[in-house]
Amino acid sequence: MQKSYTRWHGLFVSEHPSPATDEPIIDPQPLLSASERRDIHEMLAIAFERKCPVFIQSWQDRHFHYHRGTIRQIDEEQEILIYLDPFGEWPLSLNTITSVHMLE
Image (cartoon, rainbow, N blue to C red; front, side, top):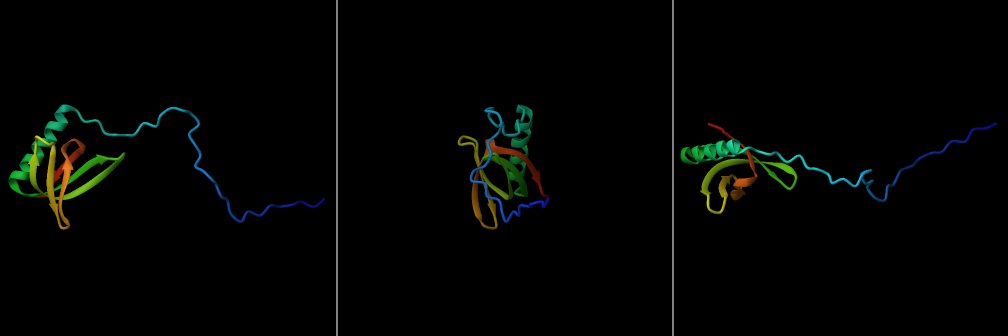
């Protein structure tokens, strides 16, 4: 009796497999307390006054994003800040910021 073997040259999956359940996928968005938000805003204000470089972590589109630069303006009314990095000035929503570190 002779055994037959199958050779695989490749495997093509035409669509991504779907989850086994219909439950929505919950994103791991960080939830900050009011105290943590207040601390972040205070740190941003101090960094703005000192004009020192900062490292900012934000949460957008289900991912963390990282920003490094100097804060040029904080607009509390529109809830944005403008920071300057070597490539120009960029707006950033205050509500998306999850952490701030002063680099000086």
